Image (tube, rainbow, N blue to C red; front, side):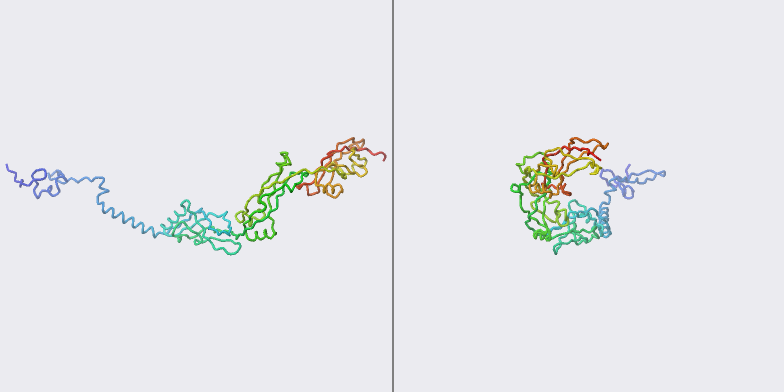
Length: 413
């Protein structure tokens, strides 16, 4: 039998091609397989889509849509207004001329308020918060000998970003005190040396030294002028020799010391603080030679020291006798040995020094009878009132440190 449907056309596999009216010929047998219905007719089966098709199908259109979306976001972002405050911003001082000193010790941390487009604000914020990029004060023209400069506007600062127009405000305002300075070599007064009550020592000036004899002071012009004219004295800090003396030094070797000018600075810190005034060298070294005064013997009038709560009336019924060959009952003077300034020793013997030689009396008997025999009484040399804390070499009692005292009951009514 001859197949009338075979018109001689073949497909790629060599099989007879379907007729032109066949549905399968239009859609392709490889894309749709016929399905049988109840009536015997066939219908195409839907083609399955690959998951990658969601990404790559119509790829060109999707790329165009993405570019349009990004462009739109950029355009809109550059028009959106934003506000931000950046806190804790460090401040760097401006450059000073060689003859100016300024106080940069307490520069505050700043809060910078930013206002502008979101993009500009974000760039400024990133610049401020980037490590190692602080805000710098702009150099000012400073006129006169002293004054202060206040920085509060954005034009007063150099910022680590280009668009400074986004800076709305800066808080707090930065105030910097400054002085114009001058320099002068100045002499200074030597330090007061505390010798821990060793009033038996004297300074040997010829064997004492200090190095250097002058210091270079650079500071406010008015301070230098006062120093230059002698209206203000530059003084070294006090020095203590107490530790050196506790170690029982050989007085053949001078006491070595070092001192600065901290106390002198503290008396006027607004003009003499280190930021405003420099001293070169900052410390001075020296050597002070001490020696013990020679022992001098003289007679000094005795003064009586009564026990606490008693006075001269408690001794009205007693004769007070000092059993010591060094005591002169007629003049009531005791011969003592002293170390100290010979002139002061002479003044003490003449009763003109202000020093007092005291003997500590025993208390009289409580039953108002009998006597006190050979009481060992302490002898003390007391400086004038107000001189007890003075470390300047003065006087020291060598002997005697004690005398014997007797209280004899008077006879008769």
